[in-house]
Image (cartoon, rainbow, N blue to C red):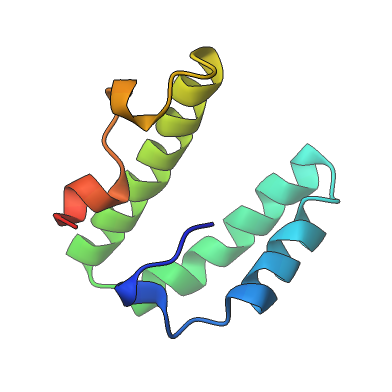
Length: 89
C-alpha cells in the first residue's frame, strides 16, 4: 500500500491491520467481504465517482496480473496504467 498527498490523512496502520486480518480468510470469505463493502461505497459516491472506483479496482487487478506474469521487470515495462497515471499524479 502506497501513500501520497491525497492519502496522507488516512490511518495507514489501521488499514494495513484490516487488510492483513482480511487476508487470513479463505478466498470465498474475502470475496464475500469485498461484496459486502460495495453497497456502502456505492451509496457514498456519485455515479461518475462509482464508475471511476470500479475502473480503478479493475485496473488494480490487471496491474497485479501483469506484474505477476512478468516478474522482475518493474513498473516501467507495464502496459496497464495505474491510479497515478489516470489521475495525472
